[in-house]
Length: 65
Image (cartoon, rainbow, N blue to C red):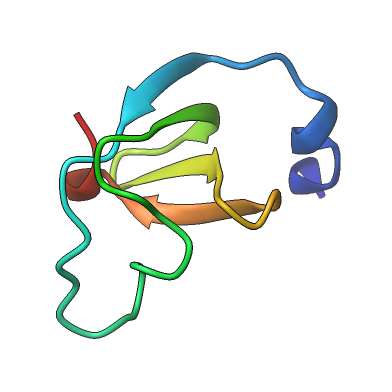
């Protein structure tokens, strides 16, 4: 259950959202284009960032630069 301490974990890097055009999911409610987000964990396909709600969410890397 490594995800339980991500909120207190140091930030790995900062990324900027470049688009919120999702095919299946509505991400424009929690991500803002042009805003920078703190990355708490990273996998091959996803970035886990602190989103606009203040919680950690997993998003495809294609939304960020």
